[in-house]
Each structure stands twice: as C-alpha cells, then as structure tokens.
Length: 264
Image 1 (tube, rainbow, N blue to C red):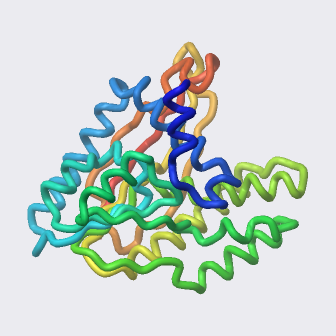
Image 2 (image 1 turned 60 degrees about the vertical axis):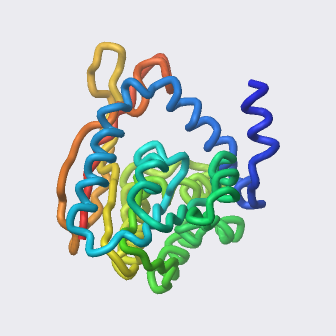
Image 3 (image 1 turned 30 degrees about the horizontal axis):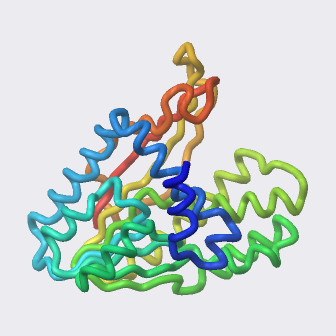
C-alpha cells in the first residue's frame, strides 16, 4: 500500500486524468497484472508473437508508435527497444517507470493524449441525444494522426466509450440498455479505426470483440458483443484471454475476453 501511495503521489498526470480516475485505474491494472500474470501469460505471448511476426516484412524499423500503451504488458519495452530506433507511447496517463525511462533514453517519447477526444466535453453533455451529437461531430474530425513504420493499437476499442457512457448514465439517471451500449461502443471504435487507417505506416490492432461472464459453476451468465467493422484490415488470429479469474473482480463471476488481431 505504501508503494502504491508513493506511485500515486509521484506519477505525472493531467487534470483530466485526475478527474476521471485514470491514475487510480493505472495502478489497479498493474496490481491485477501481478496477481493474474500466470493466467494472462497465453494472451501476452500471443500479443508478443504477433508483434514480432509483423516485423518480418517491415521495410524499415526506424519508428514505432503504441496507442493505448498503458504498462506495455502486451508488448514489453525491451521488444520495442531491441527492434526500433525510436519509440513513441500514447495514452491518457503513463506509468511513473515510463517517465523515468524517457528521461534516461532519448529514443523513448511519451505523448499524453485522449485518443477519443471526448473527455474534455463530457461535462457539457446533458442527454443521450447530446452524446450522439458529440459522436457525430467526432466522426467528421481528424482525432489523431501519427506517422511511423509501425502503429499499434492495443486493446483500446471497447474502452473508448466507457467514460462517455458512464457520464451520460449519471446525467439521465438510468442505465443504458445493452443495445444502446453496443451502438455507442461500436461507433467510438469505428471512429478510432477510421483515424488509425489514416495514420502513415503499417498497422497492427489488438481488439477485444466479446466479453463472457461465468459463474462459479463455469456457466455463462452474460455475453456481450462488440460488432465493429474491420473493413480494410486482415484478421490474423483470435484467442481467449482470462482477464479476471473467479474472485479477482468478484466472487460471483470470472471475466473472459475474446481477442482478435488485425493488420492492414
């Protein structure tokens, strides 16, 4: 607890990250990794193997950009450093260790950015219609543009809409239906993919496409889908990731994600 408290105090952050709890979530994710890394190992190996495979026919390896870099559990920093001259990590918040490493290594650059470009506008949303208007506006804009030999989007797609949906639920004082959530998550994900396609360089995408909750008897009690179109991308692999074993997130259920990987 003392270590986590020090990390909380020392990690550079932005007002947005503080307001929406990104720093707390980042520390909690690191702790979950330590508790669940044995169960996560097959997922992490798949991500790393596909990353290394994507380098085999890459024309050059001067630069790589990781969107949604977080703690780099899926693609450890040593794999990036060993294969590229310049590494750029993009996320709303970067772990303290990455700030330290960036100060020591000029090859490592950190960009603090909300890739959805929605967080600064959440307070102004008063209704579900406001959220849909925001989505329509975002769909016409260039939210990000990066140039690198390889651009990786790491397990971002289902996360982009979470805070906007939570914000609206508080404003309208009701839970969104599964159909409403599916529509909103899908639209945010497709906006991200549209911007990713416009980035210059080879693209590699890891995306969670389905979530399954199982009770202690291993029976499915809920299954959610993320029906995103990957037109223009080639699917290269899929697998299941036991994100939270029984008693990790709850004593009543485990959480498993279906992950799919794509390249352009």
